[in-house]
Length: 537
Ligand code: GLN
Image: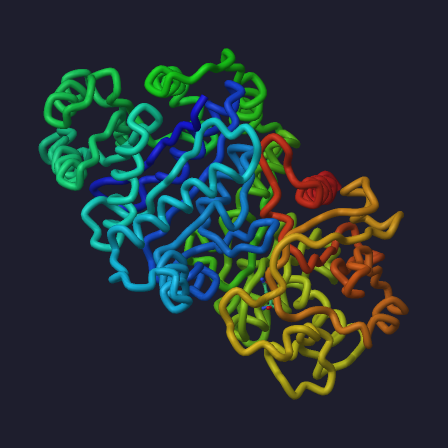
């Protein structure tokens, strides 16, 4: 049977949750034993989001093969088990880069290189490449970033129009749109949806399914109206209502409307009956917690709600698995110091987390938070930059190296506890050149980390240029630190753990990228357990 393709576009406004909708539908199809692959096409000119400010773009999701990708891939990871790699995300920048390199090589000799067909051909090639990532892929989801009407996404839309025209029976288009409720008129309005579908049709794309994002379920008459004006069967107009408690309810909401069956029918897909009992159980746990805890995340990009997306989700997964409701309070690390001391608001949490980041702003806030967690024996997890901070705080306050620093912050520091990776020294270009992707790490038995993972070798994903400086290793060990995880190939300290503390761990990698609601990450689970223990006492 030929591979099927589902194109997902968005209309009216951005931030409707196309990634979440795609991931949720994929979740349902996967549950029906259909092997899926996911592709996000992003219209911006950056080759990848790696060089963008987190305040602009939110989190950069890193894959095992070291691609810096859009945060929607995080949704794909959490909702499905599809392969995710550099083949799962393409940007306009990447597409043009490839085409221009080919032109310079002479691959198009004699021809004028144009958007159609050269750019669109490259886009179509990316879609096919994604479908070949693994064997037996039956359905490929292709989510087009941006909103219909944007100039930037036109080549992508033209490419999927052509792609479908070449495979008439193997493609469907799902259009996610917005149906606003106008308070003054007490009415839901379908006109923006009609206009956005009109725009799609001008480009030559007719949606098969319209998903209506709105506060409430649309009354029948409105679905009929959308069906009439948008040329879509009434049973193909579905609701995408705001969920109550958690994004993980979205697949269940779609299932209630039998969206999975509709898609299987439209694409003529053979599939097994659905069984969502495990997922439902997870939602039940989430809605009926037996305990509550409170964690503070002290980071550099807290005011952008998506900058630490995977960290938030990993905390929710771990807490849910322990029947616990977790309240997460974010603090911008440069706004929490008064008279050189930590402000009161940051104190009295059951746990602390310092996540990743770049550059000096907010540095002292994170150091003071770490000191507070260490001295008061409050569970603490430091991720990447957070591991650097934990090491420097220890060096300054326990080893009494007052000028201990990271060479990221002070190139001339006398005590570079954290220094640039050897193979980073020659690098001139900033894009895509960090230590990226999955690396093995050996755990020291009897460490807290080993107890969490329960295995000797782990694989975690990285995104950094700086690392722990082995020159200081003995000093640290003599004063109560265990380096519980080592990358043997490069002799890198990947995990720092404080001995006489219930849970104080810093990791060079990003464990948050590998947590799923049904398989929460062991480090996060251990962190939550330590927080619960502390609270009990
Ligand atoms: N800025 C640090 C480095 O480049 C940490 C990076 C991170 O937190 N992802 O090594």
